[in-house]
Image 1 (cartoon, rainbow, N blue to C red):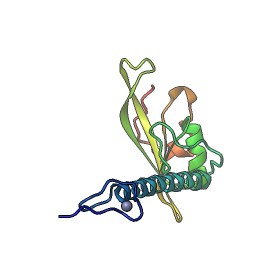
Image 2 (cartoon, rainbow, N blue to C red; image 1 turned 180 degrees about the vertical axis):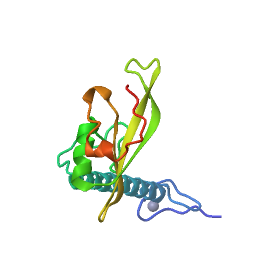
Image 3 (spheres, protein in one colour; image 1 turned 45 degrees about the vertical axis):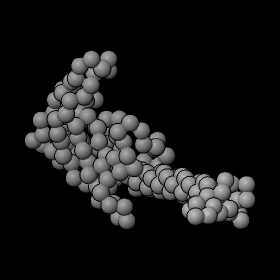
Length: 154
Ligand SMILES: [Zn+2]
């Protein structure tokens, strides 16, 4: 058995099978490729997010945060959600969910309203809000679409 040296890395330690300099280079290239792929994914997600918000009639709407995604947008109240509904239509559904209270020590029961829209060239997206009794709006077209929904006065 003979030790070899690498012509590209003459200062690397002599080796039996693999030059440590070449192994390091390969490792660095893989790291760079992974970083580039992650940056591309983040860029594509930001682009989709802008496209979705614009299509929903919300240009300049803040980028996703919390449990939002490019395809799931949180609205302030049923009034803003109704504006989206009147702009693009869609299917309205509700479900009962538990939300943590502001102090985080307990939960409260709320009615979550979801508007699902199938956008051209984008696919299914959701705009959501929690029913807020104080904001009113039982006569909004959005609410007329779900006349039998149980609206919990959170
Ligand atoms: Zn080498």
